[in-house]
Length: 328
Image 1: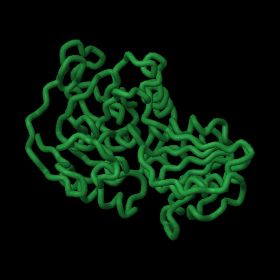
Image 2: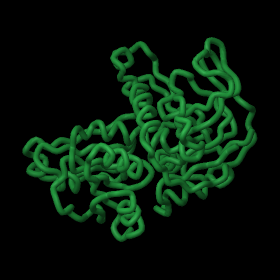
Image 3: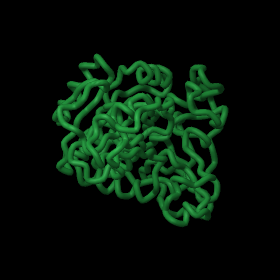
Image 4: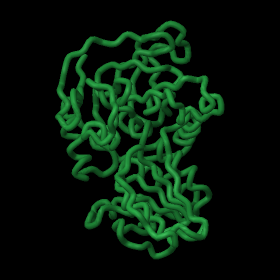
């Protein structure tokens, strides 16, 4: 099978021919149709996220068809379309797994990081961590739901009942979460890179009531802010923009160092929290929500061989929405 392989950090992915994997106990073999490109993929490729498996097939926003099942795998019939997310395996026995917090499992394995992912024609996955995809979405438009949508949904839940919601980094996750928030009756304030007028117009076209650069104070104090950008300097900026009692949710797996800040911008019960991975309950809830809501995913298609180009577009901020590799 063809695959784009990361052999070492900070080097381009190399197109290779690899043996087609065989599903083990409880696993399914999936023929990959589409795989979205996530900022986490870029952070792994650039060496910002360390301790990855090497060589590695990136990709954790995977849509494909089940073509073979391993021993004991009974959830999905052959031919079923499934989605494969970032969280690929957990132990099922620790205190986190027993309390439906498998996203915090110390033994967890991650698709496209410690397990080979979807930048390939075939991949195996633990059937417990695969999701059925709503029929209303094509493969290319469903792919961003598997991380941008899922992690965005968990971030939105962490924001509580915030009526005025700020989104820092209006990319793949931001443009999906914005639509959900608005359909819940919230007001969205979008923050982009300074000077990125195109991204600001994109946010407004999707219903944000205000859009500006990340260093600008919004016209009203926010009830909550979600940071999808990986810049730690945005945390104190967001704290200054939220009202007393508000929360700043950091949605990334990796973020640059947060600079020191004065206590007064945290005082009056403002808070900061991170979001780690996802739970299967998150996935089931979000996919049910996505099947009811007409979410529009803005995508730019690339072939599997163009994976390096897609990563470069993401690195340089040339994307609106999500890049998706069309694999088969």
